[in-house]
Image (cartoon, rainbow, N blue to C red; front, top):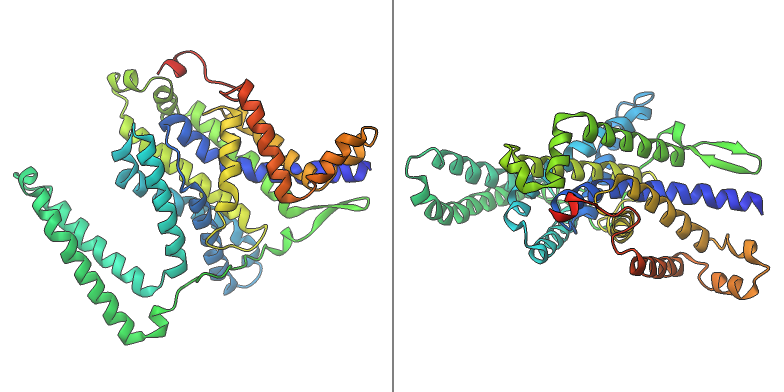
Length: 386
């Protein structure tokens, strides 16, 4: 019984570390900007697909280079999703601050677009998007330097959008007709793809009859490194000080000369980059598909809400508690411990599968929030007044 209990605790902590890694970016974005980012799971999915692409690139190098691809994949996943988050903040989120319902719907729409994008992306689509961006944004950059820019901005957009889209569609069609299947075949498609862990992550540490997988330990260490990095950035850097100032009182920070728009953009990019790192970690645990992020988004929001909005320590406690509870209940590891209470053991046995365990954990969270609606570590003082 002790072995099964330790097994359940370790697996629960490993699940909690994945949830925490996914919730770190969401916690800082939700805590600072109050934005409910429904596309956070899709940013994790983009990070996972980035890992798949880096893995395929390193296969041609052979050993021992292939064993180190995971470290390059972590960096690439962070940079790709951070850039995507920056574009999302500047193009969508920035225009919807203070309108939570519109932000919720907009980010949900972005999540649908990203899911369909990974199913359909091909060389034709990439060329078309590239041509459109070069023509439209290049023309708008030139127009923005004109003295009478405000008078012609609306007219220019009305003309440039259909014109750029038409040229981009024509270029993509010509590429598809010239190279046919090689250019039109989707890169990933709707089916899941597999990420192969490096050889040194496929082993484990044996403790009697139980083995601690190196993959789980790697994710746990990665989570600790991300937490320390986030803490050092927020507490010891100039931009971290600005982020904390805006979190406490946005209006006063703006009056003191802090560029709040830049802080928002940096925060959203940082949170999106952390989502990409989480996606890289998740790709080591199973196959990657367009719906990968949807498997974690609900649990991630629960971690943020239960821990307390914008509270790093609260997110850590909530992630570990939810991860351990999910696994211990789903694996029926608690029933033997309460065998002296047959009724409770029967209830736990009823919920002893993955889906029913989530139902019970969610019910417990709802009950907990009735007594502590602000979470384990609620905001205090000026952070609440602001």
